[in-house]
Length: 107
Image (cartoon, rainbow, N blue to C red):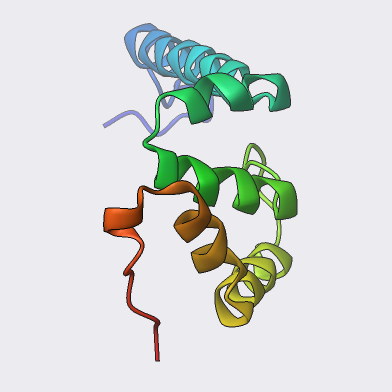
């Protein structure tokens, strides 16, 4: 067994594999940032049903997309406040057809 301090601890193949994984992760991050941009919100909302779209738009007015690590407590508090005040339910009820408006209150 060679324990010389000059012995490499990784092979060129291992370094190449790590570099490939890092490159793939960077590309995935770039794609995520592209999708999460603020100006993409209408495109995302357009793919949702009317009630879900109303909820999404209201929540997005009060919270930013999660594109970087950050403390989520303010976002959680904002959404809890929307639920507790009835604003979230009210915005959904205002957009769905009459036949679907009987969404039960949360207790």
